[in-house]
Image 1 (cartoon, helix red, strand yellow):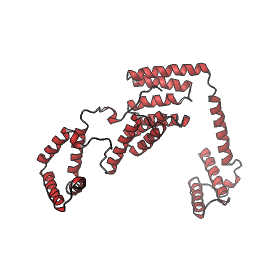
Image 2 (cartoon, one colour):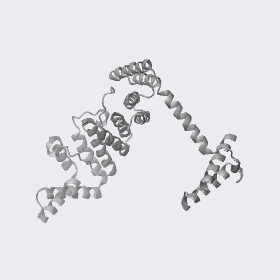
Image 3 (cartoon, one colour):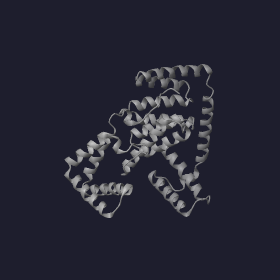
Image 4 (spheres, one colour):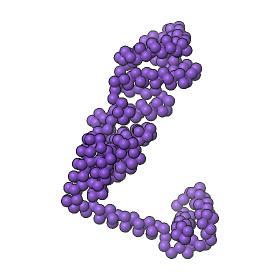
Length: 307
């Protein structure tokens, strides 16, 4: 408790100093005054006790970062022999990845990182292995470390997006894929993952996803068969469609405008009448549309672990 009290005194002393420097708004000053009172109350501090602190918090923080920078600069002095040894372990990891022995791959990449912690490729490759076995938080950490070492490493952004996608955090995943596409605009895998993530993000938000490259529904005969079966099995759907078609016909609309009006009205009516039914219809159409497509990674693409 003694060390914690010393830390509290440092913080209170720092806040009191900030209260007197005149660079904060009245609202901010009020917040800091409340913070001071709360800390003093929580740690049972005398209001004047923090005034006797000899070492300022700013100095401690400054010295900490100076030492940290020195350690980082020392780490950059990695011998060529160590670099070559780390590369060999990376190659072992890549071979284990090909054999889908992900645990061994992680072990090999970890050794490479221990020998040379400044190579972003090792972290990114290990992230691929973590993604493969479902350890997505570990993959996220490794990708972020790789990006910290190289902010232009597009593959790290892609694998970071992949991890977020598996966790269904599509907003963060889309941001990562967007960055990967900006760094490597000709990569079709990144573009495909970005579009898929945007579709999933739209689905989660309630808007039905539709890629501009998707073929029309009529291009898939299975979809037409499913539509006919749904009409037969769900009289409610058939009734709604018949009523809507009659209304649209009476308005004199034609062509594409008519088709769009029908589709929008169908969704609105079904959502109002039976939301669960509409969700079921979407799932049936989506299942048929995905027939014959590879299910691996839920449709997401990951490139090879090799750089």
